[in-house]
Image (cartoon, rainbow over all chains, first blue to last red; front, top):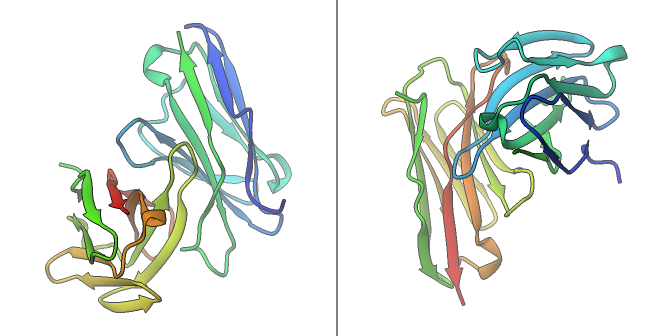
Length: 114
Length: 111
């Protein structure tokens, strides 16, 4: 399968715990985006990488959130000290520099904070 | 006020009907306009994109952009039960640093 993959698909955690999600983009795609989607809403932009450089961050991305993309390949999104309001679907998307409008989304990681 | 507004529906139509989905936006910097389809518990998939104003047709789907009114539409002809999904509009400026999505319209096509 050459699509975007995300792991884990589901994560249940207790409030206050740290969680980390992984995204593996399509191999030749140099842009990688993270979004958060809650029920009945569209994806909300969190951050994006051009290769290994994080170039844009949303105001939604509090200091409890951090994202990395070492070596410009896979990316991780970590949430520290999770809160119930962090419960959402976290989506990753990638695109190729020559066709930036064409984002390919992964299946998402569904986070439930209890 | 959100940058992109979209009627959440739900929209229920009989098979074969023409469906019209719409979004409005406020940011004049938006140049690229996309429509995504999202099935339950799946990631969105790109259906169509349009650059600036105009129409674009792809099979049963037609996308329209009216930048003067800041209004975009997606028309689905001869709708099928398999078209039942949530449709999301999305927009970006020329640099694609951010994509702004509507809240999605849930469509149900009844056999």
